[in-house]
Every structure is written in structure tokens, then in C-alpha cells.
Length: 207
Image (cartoon, rainbow, N blue to C red; front, side, top):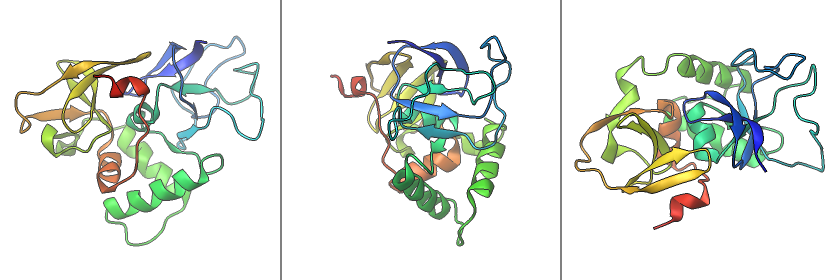
């Protein structure tokens, strides 16, 4: 069943999410008429389970309540700049945070608020440094890149074009040394490289 507020790998919110694996939150983004009026309100961009402890969000987009966002898979959510929720995905959050700190050379722990602030700074400066361009063959599986102006999932060997319903056919790159523009923020790319496991839509496993 299609849902509203689908988020693409660049973090842009679209009217419909045709296939949702996760829900997300950036705060209250809609008005009294259930129209999206802002891209974010909180620096804490999180990815949540679709269901948790039987809690019901229906009807969606209630006045004065946070705006439900939806993602095809976790690869899309991470690319958009969302991290795992510390409540409904506690184990995932702790694993992500520990690996993010290590991957980005932080020797001490930090509060979630500081982590969110650093991720927000990175999200709002997409493509602003050389770190956003990296050789394709050096990237870990599960990150999103731009190839021929199309958002694609990299699986370590091939590219698959992203869509709101799943991934397209495999495309084998000619030269793994070619630098590509990242969609997944560099600090999260490093976290995935260190071993954080990324859930991807089942279509990514098609021949």
C-alpha cells in the first residue's frame, strides 16, 4: 500500500512512497492541511521500525504531531542522512554510533545531540568537499552514489539505479578507479566501511 512522504537518497521528500521498509522522523514538517511546508525541523534525523510495541500512528500526519517519513530501505535512509532510532532500534543505534565514532576518529563518546549536530552539518553541506568524491572501487557495499545523473546503489561490484519501488538491473562500471559523487554522507560511508550492516531492498539481490 503506497504511503505519503517518500524520501529519496538525496534526502528529498516526495508525495508518495510506493514501497516502504522503514519510517523516519525529522520533526513536524506538515501544516494543518497535511501539506509538507519544510524539509526538516529537528537536527535529529532518525530511522524507525514501521511498527513498535503495537503503537499506531494512524491516521498519518496528525495536526501538531511529527511528520512520518518513509524509505525504500536502510541504504536509502542512510544516504538521506538518517541514523537508527535510539528507542525502537536501540541495538542498531548503539552499533551505528560506536562504529561512526571509530570510523571518524573520535576517541571519546558523545551525546546523541552532538552526533546529530555533526550529521546535520554534513547533510547541509552536501558535495562541499573532496570527501564527497571517491573512487568507486574503494567504496563499501550499501552506499549510494550518482552515476550518469542517476542515484544508484553500489554493491561492491555493480551499480543499480534507485527507484521508489526498488532497484534496476546491474550495471558493471568500466573503471573502478573513476571518482563518483557520493549521496551517502562521507562519515556514514566510513561507518559502513568499518562494518555497519546496511539493509537493502530485496530487488538489489535480483540477477
